[in-house]
Length: 316
Image (tube, rainbow, N blue to C red; front, top):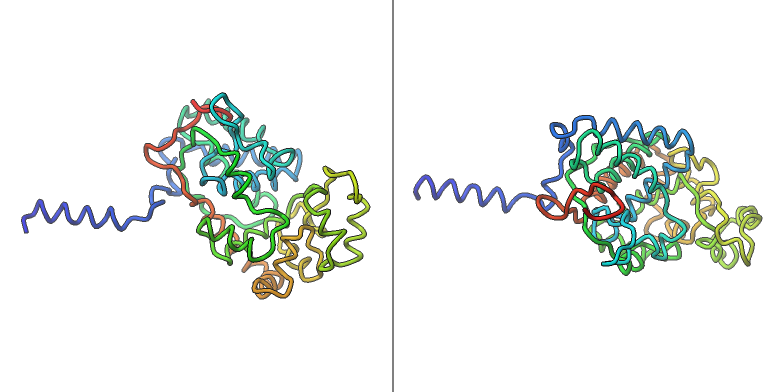
């Protein structure tokens, strides 16, 4: 075998053995926009100083983005003549928020390093910084995603897990995205912050038995059996603006606000992991950080695919 042939074979082996998301790296902007991460962190810190709930909203934006055709910033796109965006889909309409915070971050980054930092990466960084700002764990955000040029209303309606899902359906929806049951239970812990609309848990508090009766009655005061669909209640009744492990403690007392929450501790296969997290915050933090990295690796656009939008709300 000649030396040139040998070199070609080595290159092919390296290329073929590289992971599909190998282009993502935590140092992606070190040279092209070295201030990117500190700028996002400062903007998130400022947004949460105004409203702590925004932290949960920014985490949710990243989650709802990644579950629809991958982490590509598609959730940020407004409707256009060519497609209907994802903002009016059932899981998002009158629910997802934080778009103005992302707009502010994007404007600041464009002024500093034009056309470099993608909207999809901003979502990933902002989610991590929100968790940290509210007392949760940190992790190295993998970067280098590019933005899609279109969105999928049908995907948003069918691929985002529903709050009425049972455990098996919840496991399947995460498995379909390459995420394990362990990832799913850990990521559900994001519900230790934020609030939910009455319409998403009304059936659980009025029609189901796997819920603490006193807790259900306390929630009913702000969520009548008819009307009040947009009234809000905290997902974590103990500490809705602190990222901790109280969500899992609540589940053990049948104080999960959503049906899908309480399904994680209802005599099924998830009970053991919930118990572990309720007893050990550090274990939860470690697993949550790892799961967020895994979720951020769902089908990213890299290389020459997609684009880096100048305005997160519309394609270039």
